Amino acid sequence: MTGFSNAIRFILNGEAISLTDVKPETTLLDWLRLERGLRGSKEGCAEGDCGACTVLVGRLMGDEIIYDSVTACIRFVGSLHGTHVVTIEHLRGENGNLHPVQQAMVDHHGSQCGFCTPGFVMSLYGLWMRDPDPTQGAIEKALQGNLCRCTGYAPIIRAGKAMSTYGLPQGDPLWAERMALKAQIKAITDGSRVEMGEGAERIIVPATLDDFAAVYEANPEATIVAGSTDVGLWVTKFMRPIGPVIFIGHLQELRAIAENASEVRFYAGVSYSQAMAVLIENFPAMAELWERIAGEQIRNMGTIGGNIANGSPIGDTPPPFIALGAKLHLRRGNHRREIKLEDYFIAYGKQDRQPGEFVESVTIPLLPAGEQFAVYKISKRREEDISALCGAFRVFVNDAGMVSMVRIAFGGMAATPKRARAVEAALLGKPWTQATIDAAVAAFGDDFQPISDMRASADYRLLSAQNLLKRFFLETTGQGQRLRRQVA
Image (cartoon, rainbow, N blue to C red; front, side, top):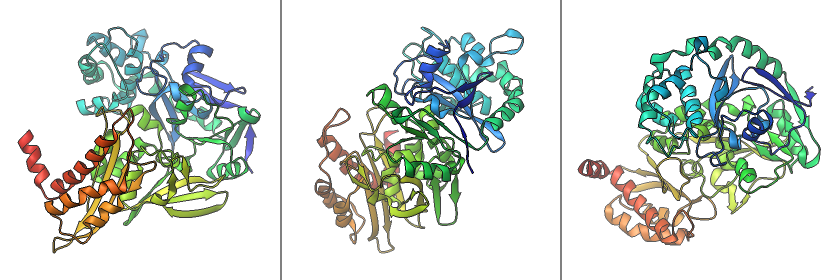
């Protein structure tokens, strides 16, 4: 029997917090600045892009507290139950000195106007705690979601390289506090469901996955919030009410990953960051795409299930997952069903999901031996940008040089993520040659009628899709490698 509580409880720096009157739309950044007077976290963009509001949020995973850098501007207070929130104000060194990360930023001139500096410090702090002597690549990756208009980044990267010379995590006060923090968090996460408010002001934090299934079946009008990387913008940019809300980011059952000899299964609450190692190990061609999805903070917050569930035509995960033949597992109460991922997307804003039904997991078959697979993202900025289009290609060429299997899927080319079936038909049973590719590219016009918008024109999208097929052919035949060497 699930117990009940009427308070969102978490730890803010070193203080236990219990809130019984929280609005569904209240963001962590607004609460910190307006209610707590902690103004080190800045509002730069209010959409999770600039990193000026970066804080760390720690959650108990097994017997360890795992800290993620997150953007407080789109993180809701209602999602913080059972966490430890660390802001820039909590950083301190030994004997009243600056924290090692802060001192490195000072000594290497990593700050000019200073507006973005707290966010950079917090991102570097999160990196320093898990890897005190990072490579430049790791530093750049950790700072993908932090923007600065002053420094040119080089001084900040130098600070990141030097921060371990000022001190190691074992000397950090937060490290010493971990045992006490674990006990506090365990006491908070006592298996009770949290409920507060009425009507559109109602907040529900389910105790377990089964509890969530029951709650959502009984309240199908509620908004499900996992990572809030999309829903957060409904509030900050569109001023949309989102209540009642069911927060599910804490559910450990939804953060599971299962592997066997034939497939990988990601439960819906698995974040991009959590999925990265397993995904790249099994599908190495996904590495470049995955590291270009948003910045570190958004990858820490955003979930695979959320990216699929909202049905966006420009989501980055559906095209490669469709090309790989993924299956989607849906649940309503105690009833579960399985569908092909490609069949989930019906029309713009419409998915094959019934009231009270949610995405529980997605299963991706491993590539059979001999098949070739690639995925390409086209965007205005290389890093931290939404796709103009995303294309995924999978082919098997038999010993006779003929295409005996092909799957091609795109996002950003139609109202939903969609397979290029006319192009597939033009390739299937044909020799895998330049002549076949040249003949097949015209079929893209039969599959897609893309739109023009702020990210790309329709003509650009169509031409890019055609060129990506040509690129895939060149890479699978070894010519792409030669071309890259010539350019280099």
